[in-house]
Length: 105
Image: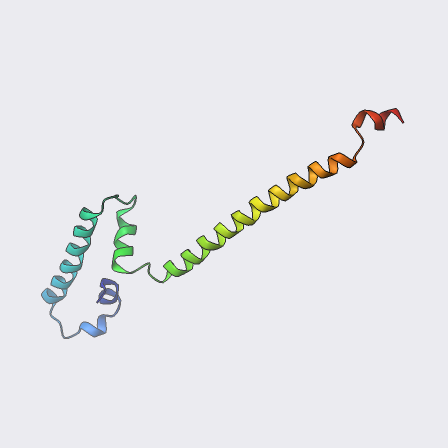
């Protein structure tokens, strides 16, 4: 069960008393704080860590991963195009007359 669900779907918890709901929230908050304490590399944003750990940012994760893969592929293609451009410029320079000969004609 996720805290996000608890906070957004109030109708599910009409029968729960307030102290029971607070106990659930306390449990999830304590679990996140323990996870944050045990994290070897502390995050830059505690709020982002909280959202990620509770699953609030879960729908974005596959999308973000797909975008990262796309960026990596585009970087590879960009490097390949740069290398090809360099080779073509070198090849073109072999066939072009030097600049001094053009001005002399």
